[in-house]
Length: 167
Picture 1 (cartoon, rainbow, N blue to C red):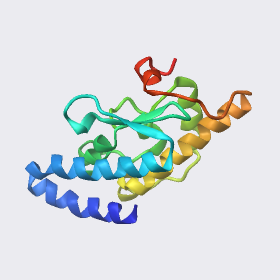
Picture 2 (cartoon, rainbow, N blue to C red):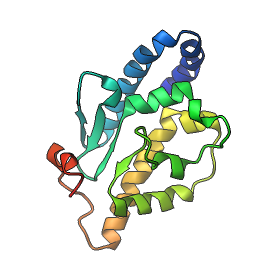
Picture 3 (cartoon, rainbow, N blue to C red):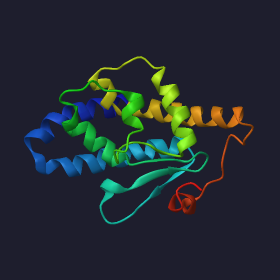
């Protein structure tokens, strides 16, 4: 992941100068990042439409989905960060398409856990290695919430569960 972090930091300057390269870089780096996640956690790709920008990695053991390409695109452009400091708890769970998709009960548990973390620099915030840690923390927080509630810590989700919104 540190190599991908470094690559995106370098590519950020290049894609701001050559905007036409942005989709290609975002698709390539996002696909790589998504594959790292998919191999780390029981999950699969949801390929809706022809544009990889909106493809998601969806998890099987917890209801969690996100778009790696949208995350990478956001990391490359950083357009919405002009006047605000990054906030892992708020931003990773916002309604933004690059944010994590979670069930409401899990969202609260994940937000509480992420709020305990120290603040990070802008570079750290946009680093895929940080997002990987956020995803790992989210999975652990969901499992901890389920354990405390007397529920099974791992679900057996399939793609149909995401079509129904986790119900």
